[in-house]
Length: 273
Image (cartoon, one colour):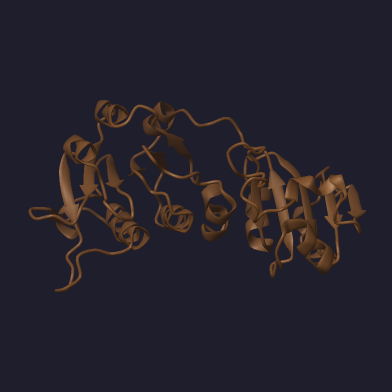
C-alpha cells in the first residue's frame, strides 16, 4: 500500500490541471451544474473521506498541504492526483475562501434503477418538488442517520449531488441510494406493486397523527412535498393514507427537513402493541 502517487504542487491558479475545481460559485461554469461535466464535489475532510469510501470514481483532490497530509491514511493505494496549493491560490481557483481547505472531485456512477431500489428496500422516502439544496442535503443526512433504505426523487426535485447538498448532508448523500421516478405520479404504482404502504405527509384536517400511523410495520414509503405548496393533489391521491405531525397552536408546519426527521424516526420505531 502507498499514498497518493501524484502529489502535485500548483502555483498558478489558471493551471488547466485544476479545471475540475474551478469557479464553483459561477453558475454557468460550475462543473456540478447541468451543462457542466456532472462532477461530484466534496468539501472538507469528513466529506472527502466519505467520497473516497463511496462508489463514485475519484478524479482527484485539491487542497492545502496540511489538509492533504491529514488524509494520508485514507489515500493509500489510490492512483489519483492530489494538487497541493497555498490558501490564496485555492481561493482563486474555486472562487471563494474555503475554510475547510480541501476538496475532492469524482465522476457520477450510472443512475440507479428505481425498480431495483424498490425491490431491495423496506423503508423509503419519496420526494416531490424539493428544490432547496440545503433541505435536500439535510433530508439525506436524516435518511442515513435514521436507517432508511433509499430515496426516490419525483417531479421537480433538485439534484442531490450538487455541491451544497453534498456538503449539508455531511457526505451521506453518497451512501444513501437514490433513484428518479421519471413518470410522475404514475411510477408510484411501482411501490404498490411491490407491497408498499404509501403514506403522504401533509398538514391537513383528517391526517393520522404520525405517532399513530404505524409507519414501522411492513414496507412503507413516505411522500414529502416541496417547501412551499407541499404535495400535489395527484401525489396525495396516490397515497394509502395521509399523516400529519401534531403542532402547537398558531404553527401549521415545520421545515420539510425537520418534518422528514420526525417521520423517518417513526418509521424505525418498534410497532405498537
